[in-house]
Image (cartoon, rainbow, N blue to C red):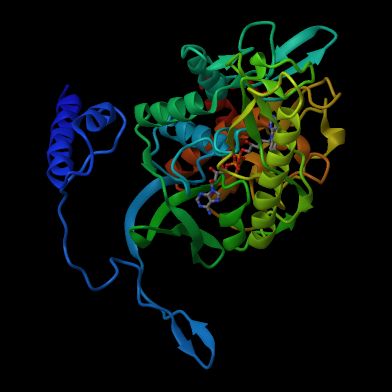
Length: 447
Ligand SMILES: Cc1cc2nc3c(=O)[nH]c(=O)nc-3n(C[C@H](O)[C@H](O)[C@H](O)COP(=O)(O)OP(=O)(O)OC[C@H]3O[C@@H](n4cnc5c(N)ncnc54)[C@H](O)[C@@H]3O)c2cc1C
């Protein structure tokens, strides 16, 4: 009610203001009432220095030199999760629910990463599909998230017993993720881009990040790198592998049920008139900003050209481009050199240090147990990873990067981070049976 009152007041002011200028008729203003923005006289201060950006770089002999300066530490926490994609959100939830003080830092303005901002909507590898029937592999927090989406009209399809690989709505997913993080008491920082690590010899102690508030730091007992690109473990000096993979711009088409064409326009979504279109795109280096820029610009042009050709077919005039993903579809950039590297031959194998399992993928029907070793670097202490940048070879990263397995590794990394922080040790030294016990308590399936 308070909000409604404020809008009415603002529009009255606006009406009076514009009328006094004789710019528009009262009728025009009245028709704007619900849609137009309002004039607001906020507060303002005059400022000379940037808040906490640190001193400006100096141009010395044609080189830009950044002076050494102190960075403000704004939090000291048990677990710092960097990257709020599906793996990061589940990691933060798992650690917080176990009892850790958790901060999650995300560079964009919402959670979900490629699942939401990247508009990848179908959650694959949720079940194995053997002769004995379907076995749900993604349980625990990931499945709870999918079940929460079911309660929102238009939130998800195919999330039901006997079905697999559900498709969710990106807005509903962003919303549910933020709700779950808030309920678990996770400290959230959006619009914050982690640029480096804070090190003490081979041990990571925190991360620094840039935002509109300047350059700041967070220290933590354990850091979980869920940036998808391994930005933090790379900055901390952990050995990793660089990959070239296909980069696409995912998008959605609207009015797909109001056209004549029988051609498959894309994958189904929870909304009957909307299809989501996965784009393979050209191979590229996901860590090269010029390559990323080209993929965005070329991808957009390709989408508009294809749309135009479709719209020109009689009966297709109502088809329109609903939206393109705000986050470019980068599939693989860095994977960790972990204590173990997952390979395709590991499907169907059992691991003593299993922390979860992923289901059927691209023709392979058996489940794949996920060993703890793929989350832990060979050398650097106090850090572990989850999601699409875990340790897997060229082929197998096409499995570990799917949303289903990312939800699973996220939960495992969060639980392990909690244990390491509570025991004041490195994730490399925790007792795996204790981790497995905690994961089972959290409803996870270990395969
Ligand atoms: C085009 C395409 C199609 C795909 N199709 C499917 C499919 O059909 N089904 C399926 O299951 N999977 C599919 N995938 C794979 C899947 O979507 C992703 O691999 C998965 O969502 C990755 O989750 P993640 O949490 O590991 O990483 P991401 O989703 O990449 O999340 C990483 C998060 O970290 C943030 N971040 C990154 N760097 C920093 C930083 N330095 N500081 C702060 N924050 C940072 C990002 O903004 C992002 O939110 C597809 C992927 C692509 C690109």
